[in-house]
Amino acid sequence: MNKHITLVLGKTGVGKSSLINGISQKILCQVTNSTTSGTKEFEEKNVLIGDDLYQFLDTPGLLAAGDGEDTKYKNELKKAVSEYPEFKCILLLFSFQDDRLDGPIVQMCQNYMKIFPAKYFWEHVFIVYTKSFTSNQKQKKKKKLKIEEAYLSEI
Image (cartoon, rainbow, N blue to C red):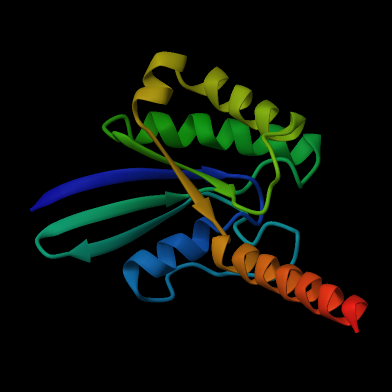
């Protein structure tokens, strides 16, 4: 059996736990609808796919808890990385709804690069965009409203 360790990183509420639930096709992680982090500490979630064991390290989100909590999470991340030195995959999640990589998101990436050597970090990162379905639905509604407005203005 092959073992694959994957670290799942991103802002609070971006969908880290939901992604793990989706991959496993089970409810392994608690998911909340609030803007506060549902994941309060690092959690190892094991998923068996075929003959391979995938260990996902679900992490608390950064940037929403305040500086004191962010410092705590960064220290926990350093500890988790030292306990799993053989991991080779980092899933870095961004919300498709974020218009751009604003200051807080850049700061989050800089924080991660302080924990990992920059070269190592980017060699092992896979960027995953979440919440695209929700964004597409909003785009469709906006388009429909514009079409309706154009039609009504012609009448």
